[in-house]
Image 1 (cartoon, rainbow, N blue to C red):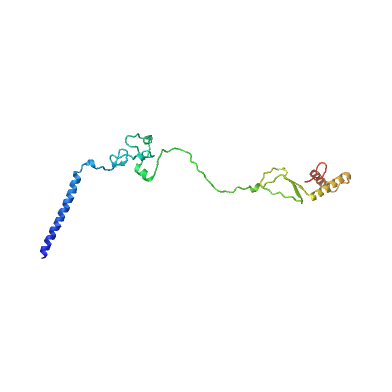
Image 2 (cartoon, rainbow, N blue to C red; image 1 turned 180 degrees about the vertical axis):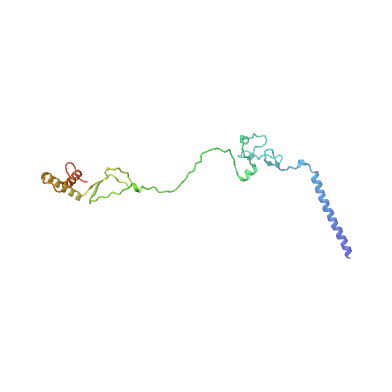
Length: 209
């Protein structure tokens, strides 16, 4: 019984093997008999680009920068320049890279920064009066306004200062009318008198300071 079953199995396996070998041989013969004109292998062209036989650059890509011209079109002058780098148009389309002729141009860089503009503290001065009174006229009315040496800043009226100036005028007039013997420290008094006279007007009239 076992021998009868084994014989059909061996026959069936041998039949499958023959069919497989026959199919492989038929495929091999068909490939050999196929004419070479129907096969278009991808290879490197004269300009180093890849593509199929009979295929040119797509019409919508011919006008793009970096695309090679189709057959019959004129080569651009860029291709004839020495040191020109040429890239496959397919790669250019995939990556979106564009190339052009390198030129020398000035590199301009704009720097924006935040800051605060303020006055020079070493050139600022605070002016205060040493007498009580009120300002009648102000010549410098803005903070940070530049001034020069000897420039009037303001006009001030002080009753205390006017009273002191009148007393000084009376003392000077008394000294002029009754000259006496020189004091022990006459040189010092003379210097003080000259300074006080210079501080007053030539007519010795008390005015607003």
